[in-house]
Amino acid sequence: MEIEGVGRNQNVRLHTFCNPRRDHEKASNQITSVLRFRTVSKAWKSLIDCSQFVVDYSVNHTHQHHLLVSYSPVESVEQKYISIVDDETFPKQKCSLPDPAGSGPRLLGSSQGLFCVCTTHGDPHEPGRIIKTAVLWNPSIRKSVAIDLPYDLHRNSVMIIGFGVCPQTSDPKLVKINSTYSMPDLDTIIYSPWQVEVYTLSSQAWRSIPTINQPRNSISLKPNQVVIDGFIYWHALDLVSVSMMTTGFEGYNLIVSFDMTSEEFMEVSLPDSLARAKNNNLVISKLQESLTVVEMVKEAEKQVYCMWMMEHGGPNSFTKVFNINSPDASIEVVLGFRDNDEPIFKNTNQDAHGVFVHELHSEHINCTLISCNGYALYAGSYMETLLLLDH
Image (cartoon, rainbow, N blue to C red; front, side, top):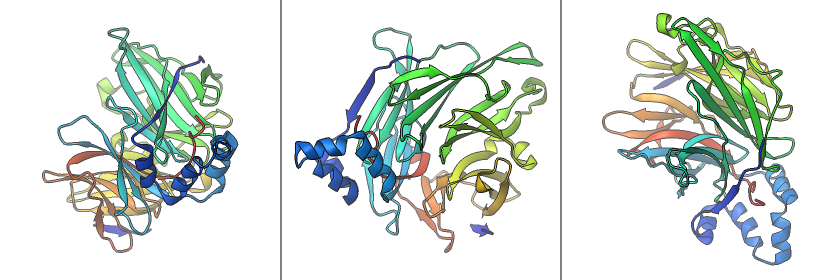
């Protein structure tokens, strides 16, 4: 391998996983010390548990970086999570984390040290009814908050969930987007306006937001997201004048952003080559606190991964920063990047299923040795935080 160039109240359930003492020993010394100080006296516990201390500590202190990897063992739907200290010792310092949700969860993304995991399960009190839940999870302190997602299941309806921590308030926020469409015939698609609701953990309630400044009805969001500097970004498709039944064309690629402070959407254009690429060949990610688009291009005997970066926060300023050439066809996708910008790959072949890191300077393949018997689902960098401690 070589690199070229450079609205309604919901019940909220609080969970603490595993033995607290054992969990604290696995956390970094910094988080461990703060949590142990809570046991000194009631006054210290009251001080550390207060919302202002949690926010100040999370925002104003330098915290250790970790890499969270989610994978599913071979021949199992169960998901496992491993946290690795992301420093010069990588990948030696690692520990397993308990599943924060269960029931085949899907890890949506991370923001300021918190993760959002979505899960679907049957209602034990009403057979046939499905309950969707978003779990906000802090792996550093082993706490999570489960939030029910109100929705109405209709044919040709899609629900997309966005998650982020608002930088102005340090308040975790969920965005629920419902979209529907109908097909009177094979060549006609009629799209309905989006229905958007926002949930903040401080209010514990859903509320609708105005339809102004929403993207066009014909825009469909992909489920994966990235959070950068107070914005949630999704890979999206513009399906206007598209007839997949007759042409097979999937639509034009673009990026849709959501400002967590102003609660407004914006469409972000991509370079023409990316806009017209097959949508399954594109992955959005974060590199150097900037939005990136990773494009996979298959050539004769190798795969080329092109890294495009949105510079200076500009909506239309994507620039190709480097390529990664791989002769190994078992490389399936770029999952993300370490804190030092090294790309994390998902590898799949007949002999092994794993996650590995390509070291940019030495071109060495560094296998994490954590999911060689499973299928990697997610890998992302995060920093320790105390958010959720006061919930």
